[in-house]
Length: 380
Image 1 (cartoon, rainbow, N blue to C red):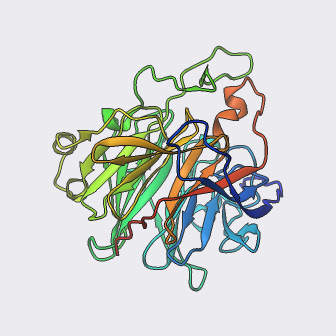
Image 2 (image 1 turned 180 degrees about the vertical axis):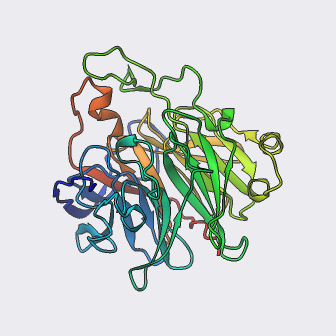
């Protein structure tokens, strides 16, 4: 059965508008608007080594016209074509069903992380996958379908990082940000497609107990129309990789902590979860965030969705590097070759599910950036 679509246009206007003066001292560098995004709400963004910018739109109820798009000539257009972007569950491995993340690697490929779970439903068999698109030819060159050994009925794939130096063709590290079951990390061998599920349900991949964020002075909770409020519990979400590829950083969205674990253990098929858990380091506390990013100097970046800020982690300490009233839920972060940190601000917390059925989002959404004078981690 085909998942119905409404044709919504994602018009984009390009601008470089410096932010107004930050309301508190020390809130620099200046925030610049890259694009105003109308239509469906975006989540992911990636800036390729050649500067091309890609965004994605999950099936969360806005019925986006396409799942993956490229920012091109003032508009976001379907990428790599319209056919692949039609979510057809009859051929789930050949179409995007609900894309949560896009990441460009150092081999001129755009990787698309498809949750296979429109509307946070149970994943469609054969639809949970990694898809590689050659950015030179704009053609799909590899599709890795993730099986039930790593994809649970409650799994919701969120973000991904790559190290192309490992094994024959590299490995991918993926977060499972389940809202109904255990969080976890998934390690994928890109040559064979063989996958391992790691730290499933471990405290580091699960939401903090009793966690309730506050935005604009109000607690953020699930508030469906006509029902009592409930906790919003989202598991492992943000992910980042150290410049040498030896350490993976990750955090649950519903948490004030983030963690580090050796990647060698994650990849080792003989390592048990108990062995891996013994090497997990709690690097918290931190402000709750959605996405993470890493630069080639070893710094980690995170959004602070409670306070509309971007924060930087160096030498065990978080500092706020940008604060702006336009940073309305910083979602995915990506560092470009131009020394800027790019991120989507998509007003996620204004969705109807948090406001008794009222949609408080105000378009356009925005793609923003700040100058960090560092480059991305590209392991190839």
